[in-house]
Amino acid sequence: MSAGDAEPSAFSLAARVPNAKALSRLGILLSGRGSNFVAIAESIRAGRLKGVEIAVVVSNLAEAEGLKAARELGLPHQVLISKGRSRAEHDAGVIACLRAHGVDLVCLAGYMRLLSPEFVAAFPNRILNIHPSLLPAFPGLEAQQQAFEYGVKVTGCTVHFVDDDLDHGPIVVQRAIPVLESDDPHSLAARILAEEHIAYTEAIRRVASGEYEIRGRRFVKRNSE
Ligand code: GRF
Image 1 (tube, rainbow, N blue to C red):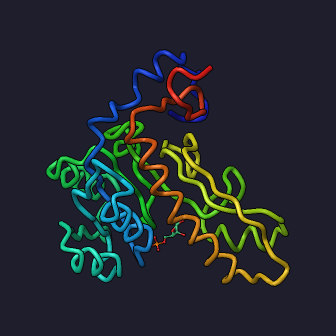
Image 2 (image 1 turned 120 degrees about the horizontal axis):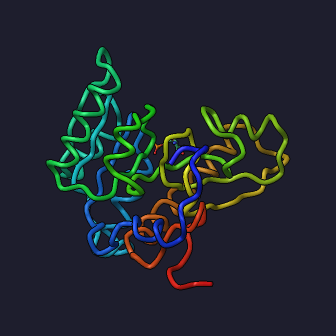
């Protein structure tokens, strides 16, 4: 949904929230280090995410460290190079790959590309992203550095649904940490990352549980007032 759309009724939004029981097959998209992906995989292995499995890991860069991790973990993985292809072309290839692996929940984990509207429409309310700030503060690149330079006293991370606007969709989980006087952007980013690893598992658990729905922008327990 783009920012200018009229807000649908709670009923129609609830109807669009996917049936959680069907949300068991994750498609992870990444471009780099992959520590959030590894944290999710570890949560599954440790039984913190029951009934959920990683169906495929997709990277748009051949050299992404996260791919190496997928290989070592014995998980299905695929490189779909984005360079030299139009966004529409590349996204069509990624959508086809996710569908071929039966993915029903897409998790962006350091995927350094904007999704086309066609991609977002292909998985409505079924794409999660993690961002290293308390949105709506500091969207975009280098959010930790932005927060540090702004001088905020509290920052953190956000897991949210992806819509057509950058770092914008309904918020699923946020975790906050204080900015310490001893922090530099590097130490701050490291402490935020530790929270990201907890937040992503919690967000997947909530979305996959089917016990929540989206009302307006609010992701809330079903049947709650
Ligand atoms: C994380 O800081 C995440 O919030 C941002 O990209 C970074 C990815 O890190 N979207 P990793 O590849 O999961 O280690």
